[in-house]
Length: 188
Image (cartoon, rainbow, N blue to C red; front, side, top):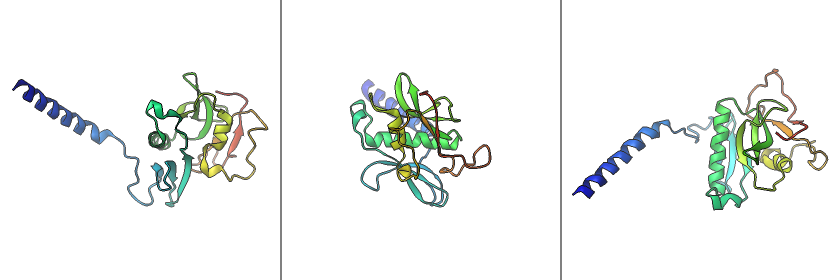
């Protein structure tokens, strides 16, 4: 009898706790065809972080191809979902201005910065050990792959700051569009 009572109490507690937390969990899907934002898509068969602009066009940002972190519980699908959620939170909080490479907790990462030559502020994702942060940054965004005039990361070891405000349809602080690439002199 005591075991049955304990089971009922635990089940009721679990239901109560889940109903308390559910309303506070943000939704990262789109509720309308014109709602802009980040999401993880599997429409091509592989997970891809995508951005839907205000016109409803879906732009691929990050193609998830590495299984390196799977043994830690972060397979491609999980990383896609987590990173898409992070990017959406940063976008909604207007903290997604520049994407750059830096270090956090002694690991190379792709992160956000508020300005050119600014510090690495918000984690986007961690790079595997030994992965070139500059090359990874240049190859990061799928929509940039055809960018004309993109500097080769073999020519310079300066860390670029990629201004993504135009892609997010955000105005720049100066009121005009800045260049997409602004190299920095050091790894932050």
